[in-house]
Image (cartoon, rainbow, N blue to C red):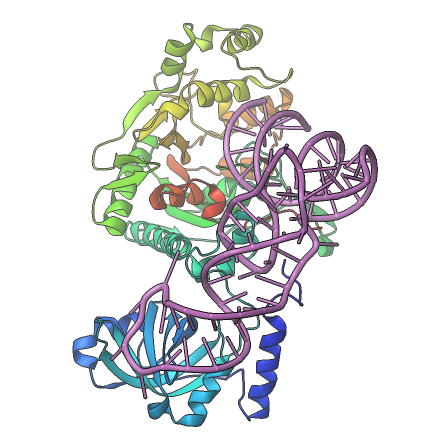
Length: 482
RNA sequence: GGGCCGUUAGCUCAGUAGGCAGAGCACCUGGUUUUUAACCCGGUGGCCGCAGGUUCGAAUCCUGCACGGCCCA
């Protein structure tokens, strides 16, 4: 972190003082703009010779004695300014010496095209809107240092256009998802982030204390059990986009605080959810890029075609040479070890199966694929498979080896649901809970329901070709600097 | 938790037989009335991540720590 004494700071403070001496307010209140930077370029034909008012941050500057060129940047892009002593007058021109790269300016001027063809504003009048006291990162290379890009994200998006692009796309993607679901009659809701009992996934929660209720609480690890209560209540198509929190690992694909969309549709099953995913991904690609193809990590992925279906058990059976469903827990551990996959003693069968699949198969699934029909014990909230009671009706959408979601035909038999919760708790599975209130809700009756969760961060990674989840999260947590 | 890599000026980076700490950009002085990574002259700027150790001498070698990245668990 730069110190107060660092280069440029003192000099800029002096300029600030001089400006005040000259009666200039270095921090303005407002500025009426007629155009944004990009609009001046875009509408050049109509604007040429006309007066415009634009504002932005001073990003470049080339001085030539009695004239100078500069660029200001606003959120649409940049526009060049041309500043002449004979146009501005001696004092306002001289006062330009008190400006620095990084300052915010508002200008009034005439639009023209320079000899080299760049659309430019010939400035008639300028005002300082905010003085910058810190030197900006280098104009050509931008801000490269990964740690600095995360810790000072404002600098990253200020000077690295690609970073800005990612976050603008993130916003568009979320907007498009809403548009897609709203058009299909889904209702967006908000459910509690602070929950008295966590559930809907197997993950270590963050804990906190709710003073006025004098009660331990958890930050949600999933929205599932609340959204399904709403299905019970008669909201037939419902979704929520929000943060979930899992007090666990942090790597390229995982961030403890992440954004998920969960949606539930009454009278539907997991096949309907597969169709929805196929449509949604095609829609996103078309809206964002005008084609069904995207590029991720150097590969072209086409969402025009239906996704592959890969049965969880059959894929594992082929890879392991034996049917994992027919193996005892201890045999399964041995077979896993034979494939180089070691787990801590006491790891649940569900976790082991999951790990086997992730390590041996999932990372090779490049083409869009639904991994379907998982073993029952992996998924206590999914409905038994209609053709094979050892399995559940579940799928995980996988693209480029990356799991981007999870979906089921939702379990709506309250007796079986309670049994499945109790089994998981009895097997002492990590983070298994029994949500009595949810069981009560199910006892009132829940229609057949298809449910789907999608990791928004990973979705954004996929659609913006980013390698790390931290590159699609504006302010990823880092350790405190000491 | 383990392995590897990184940390040098505001930014981007050089810097090994261990011997005065470097460049470009930015900044400051001067010049320049159509430039655009403007240009020309001159200049300022360093806890070389932190703490120890080895050595006549350490950015450089060794140990530990901090922060970050990648890979593994």
